[in-house]
Length: 185
Image (tube, rainbow, N blue to C red; front, side):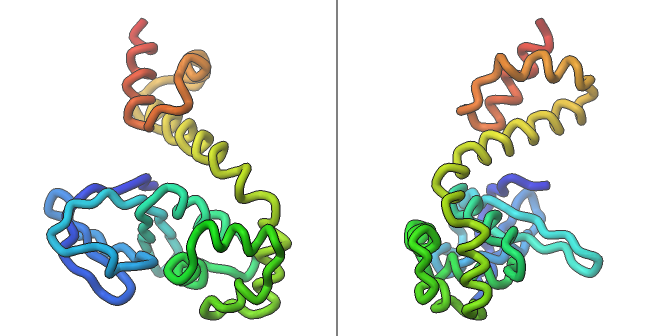
């Protein structure tokens, strides 16, 4: 799974951008492709959806945008192709506020969101958005850190021994450096 891709925007379309990284062009569906500029270097946060017949990348300018997207696609009846336009036409704070205030009319303004889906979004996410964003980011970093360390050949007991000593507020790259330093002690 990818966390982000850093590269140069080579192509912009109505629903996606192509980001080149080391000679590979990644087609990434984004909420607002025209907010990017060709030949601009970007860091885009990625969600990869793998199904039997497709392998799709969805991209976001901020972690907060990605986190909201991940929470939205957990709602029954709401997939990636319905959640992405919500981020394109609504602000993150506006969507969160509408969910907390049970504003069905605001949610129904988004493409393909009807009364039933809007009520399901409120049912599933009300009260969960503001408090869970930070903790889910921390969990994601530690899960990724554990996978990286396992990939490098470290055993689960050794990994668990050093985890409490690593600062949860660090970026993943810094956490990996810290973990490797602690493993060598």
